[in-house]
Length: 182
Length: 184
Image 1 (cartoon, each protein chain N blue to C red):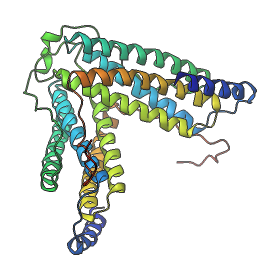
Image 2: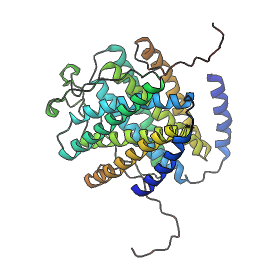
Image 3: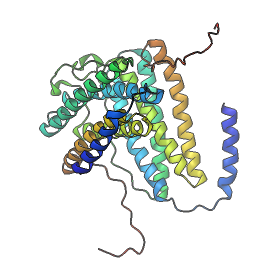
Image 4: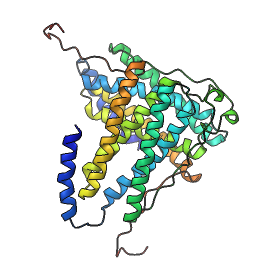
């Protein structure tokens, strides 16, 4: 798949270079704004997730997610500032703390944490896809495509982990009556 | 608004009685399954939220949300069982614990808790309306309309609490150029 992506990127890049830049439209600004506010929340929640579990694999996945959120946050803030878009109020990073000190009324189980990370991916992927649909400027589309691709890559690894550890929830299978037995 | 909804309900109700019940289609089944999985997770996380804050107003709102999720969970589980749809694995309720003993690396601030509840409700609204639009059987549509209405009603009250406490994040205002200045 990377080749197709690269090709697409090149094609769009060629447009971007010649295209006279119009100001962002309200939909594009709204996507950036709400995405950034969402992203910062997810980062903080994932940091709280790291502080809630001792499972090395899950901690690693959360660390990777936090790294990805942070890098995306920086990039989108830089873009928004350059376009004169105000930044939403953002949550601050959580300090490190001991997972075994968390009261059980607040501590999420590994299963719940893994699934919450999954839900975060679903939300963010939806945001990116919606933003791509709404974007009129090609350079903006490109930003969202990059983020989307990062989530797809991360999500594929995450799903493998979640499946292996038995955390994946699978909807009921579809058995068509009279289907040939394999 | 309740009157309008009541009217709508009775209209749909009349259809429901006459309609021959067909088996659910896969989209309806998927909608129920996903919604139950989502509500189950959300309920547990909201309970963890109650155990993270000492703010009475926020605790009250979170408790109301938990009650809402619980009642929806019961209703949809009963419906799914009656239609033969398997239930997704659900998380168990959290015990009560002391908010002040939560380490700061895990404790979410009141602002973060409020915003995460708002996001959860928004997700539920999206999920309900998506499934409602996919449903063909009137009794199923009616169930989703009911859930949708409950979430929207909750969100309206909750949003005013968030605004009062300064937790609401508002996107940049829209200033069209050349708008006549009207005294407000």
